[in-house]
Length: 126
Image (cartoon, rainbow, N blue to C red; front, side, top):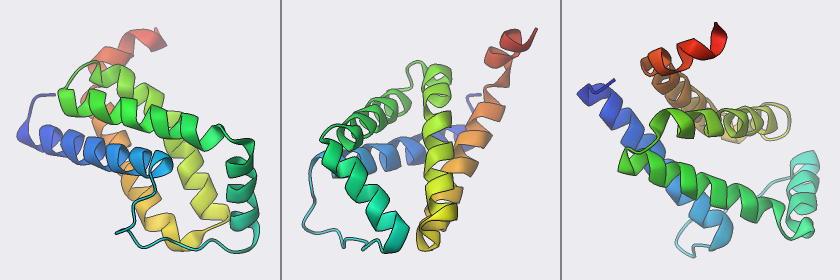
């Protein structure tokens, strides 16, 4: 659980979540925007039009990213991230395949870190 490898993965995932969470709340001018088309554009527009969904997801990503960066409640943060990760993967798998590589990276990082913290989760399955 406290290996250098795990620490690096945790920090990379935390920084990524912090960056993408902030990008949902603050539109960075230096970052090239990915233009969604078709169903992906309709879906993202629908979420944006609610006025709160993307902001809530962004706040969760920031919160989880901070927990990972601060090394606090890591097992809890990874559990919170699991359904978000699956939604990111499904969105890119079915609606926006160019972004699939980032979704797979987030999935792999989350899965490896959950595996590394499996001792904490084991009592949930007894």
